[in-house]
Image (tube, rainbow, N blue to C red; front, side, top):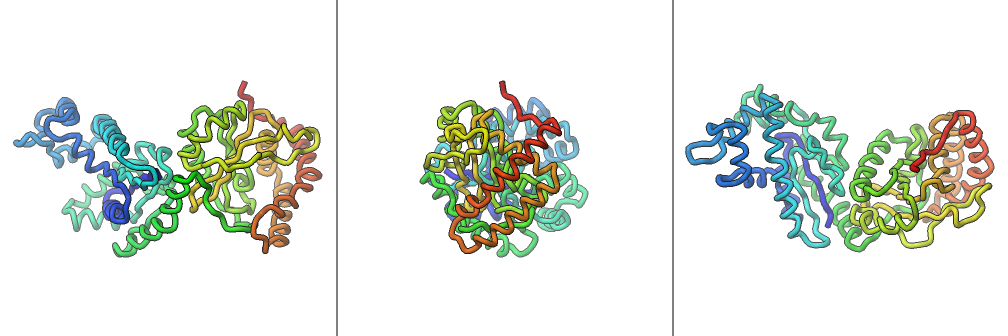
Length: 402
């Protein structure tokens, strides 16, 4: 199934978006609803809250007095942590039970107000953040919910900052306008990204990509995207020795195809094969074929350059995933090439010029094969001797996992 984590600050409009996902066909797991369920009279949750906050935290009917509890925890971060420590594990356990009812191919949207605060982003294929400026959220809370302004701002301050939520987001839905505007964004996301993503996951297929070597200007967001993808991979495959952002998008200031390259370090190709199902479920299915990097001087045996290759099933963010054995020539080359380009401005400029010339030369190609092949002489004749000299002079060493 495709798992979407939906979050947003208080009064951002997250509930409106969640309802639209349900209407479109998503299986909705609402953490707010579950949070109420796990503290109903007679539950373990309510008993533990009473133990922690006292009997006066329940009303005459024996139900949780939410207004009273809210006044306590939003004013005292320590007490809020106590409450979260009681409720959050119960909510996660119940959400996991509900997920068991979903079917392969389903799109499951988990509505989690504190997804960022509880660092759950890596558990989802995508994190969707509903965003609205703070002043607008204050207006909604005072005008629609009847809160005093200082209470509204206190509740906003008790959550993650807007910047923290945006940093965790794979998709940002802007809800600063009319409700119809954000609902239209949800509809486009569903049709153009989520449905194809779910279909790719179900079939074990990589996402289709536009052909040709189309270079994009350097994008500072590439690093953050790579970090989010790497976190999901580590969650799915803890046996990995390392996950590194490599390739052109890992070099600040370098134009590149808008494709994130990740190198996954394994102790053997047998381990890489064992990890294939878990990586596929995480959204990175194996790409069939006998994969190897082009052999370089000094290590001419093609067998030394074998690897496994996976790619992202998400049509919204192309990614290549290279599984290479620690200490192998291809593994070392990827790390050294990246670090040399980061450190040497002249090398970076030379490579950028080559890429731009070749992208123009093969602009009409349907794929990138000729573009990639045309770069190989430069890798062998220019890059390899220069980066080896840099490694010697700088003291660069590849990581050791012994």
